[in-house]
Length: 280
Image 1 (tube, rainbow, N blue to C red):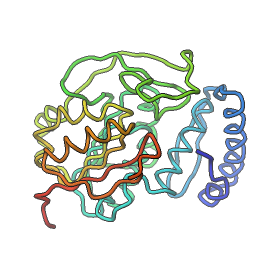
Image 2: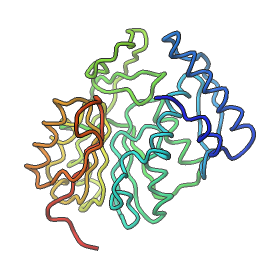
Image 3: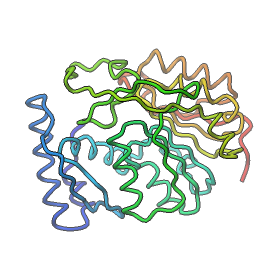
């Protein structure tokens, strides 16, 4: 994805941020030309829109790509009732650095958001971004979400925080090199067990963005899905798209919108409403 420099400059809250945006755009050009990530691990902070956010040089390009998707392109919230202005409980599975959760709170300060992020680097940024913006009502968990509670080996790409999962090669990427991949052990939880232990009986919006682990998440969520109004899922292959749609239809949901109905991209959002959705 090409960074929209002019749009980012319009989002910049100070001169330092604007200057840094110009620098990161050049980093992106270098990354694409060399197939190597930017070096450096000293954090810096940018003021974008209403938020102050933490970035690191080696992942700044990927992080800004996600910001652009969330705040310019409205990923995961392209239908008005998925924005969550009246939501009470939102589950964010695959929270990354917290941009979806932070935007949910900007739209609706009274909602409660539960975030799950297994990537240790992205989790650290998630925690700091929430603290930097003084957001209350966001609870974060350093955990993957799957079919059951257990420890798993988790793979992630430090320079591209959105790419992670039980196996990052689930989605074919020609540029991926073995040395880009890091591994760690992380706790996995099922949404059913989590919601039962935290006394969450009803969910307004469930967002799932797990880089090919969609079916694992859904297989451990049958109970809470029956008490969930809306689900938005980023699918990561055409094959997974059909599995996800079939699973959700069997769970009582209708597919009401998808970004890429012609399946021209390997990833796109699927929007589902419960057939027994509550009226507010």
